[in-house]
Amino acid sequence: MINPTVLTTPVAAVAAKPAVGFSPAGRGSLADLLHMLGDDLAEHPDARDAAAQLAVGLRRVPAGQHLIQMGALSVALYFVHTGTFKIARSDEDGYEQVLALAGRGEVIGYDALCVQENPTSAVALEDSTVYVVLRSDLATFSRQVPAFGRELHRTASLALARTNDLVDVMAAVSSEVRLARFLLQLSRQMTAKGQSSRRFILRMGRRDLASMLGVAHETVSRAFTTLSMARLLHVNDRDVEILDIEGLRAFSRCTRRPQEEAGLPRARRLATQRGDSRAAARLQALPA
Image (cartoon, rainbow, N blue to C red; front, side, top):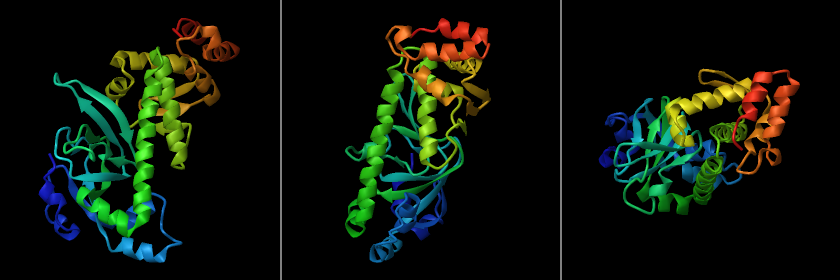
């Protein structure tokens, strides 16, 4: 659990008193945070000057360490500066359900603003840094720099959209279609960040991905194999390249409807046209 007393000290003092697994990465300001989020207040110099005077903690979280723990006191919002975090919830029996990934520019901890304890946990999947805005500072920051209030609304909307994305993934019956939908969502997120839409590195392992998709670990591996055999993907460990994004989109539209009404025939047809009879046969056997 993060020690609240560390977070409530001034930025300069925090640098001298790191918490376990949650060490300082330097000094930041609200202007730095807004710049990262895409609003540098260039047309509002007064607001930019005001934002530059408001201290915001910048924290480093090593890979595998908790940024927040489920059930811990909610003391701040965290805006991802670098790296990736896994958002998850644990049941009483210890089972961890992965709910989302949070990358650069996304907010963590917003779901705790209406309560006193964090309903989810956040774990760094790689060495990461976050901007820390105390709950007690939210109203002041929004009042003094209205652009921050607008960014809060935008990031909250983005978090809600991520929840809808998860619902869309879980609506699919087959594990292969769930994986296809997840990869397409990840592709769109990468595009929005100005990165490649077709080639990326999966930051989470297969077990975490299986938890997020609601399937068994072995099933995820088989799903990757199926999509690779259909030559929709090329996979090398966590390095994924989408070879046929239109084919993957067609495949992702498979639902509970009969196969001939869904997008599966297109993916099967593409495999047949390529002369890959094994892939076509594998796709033929998939449930819609």
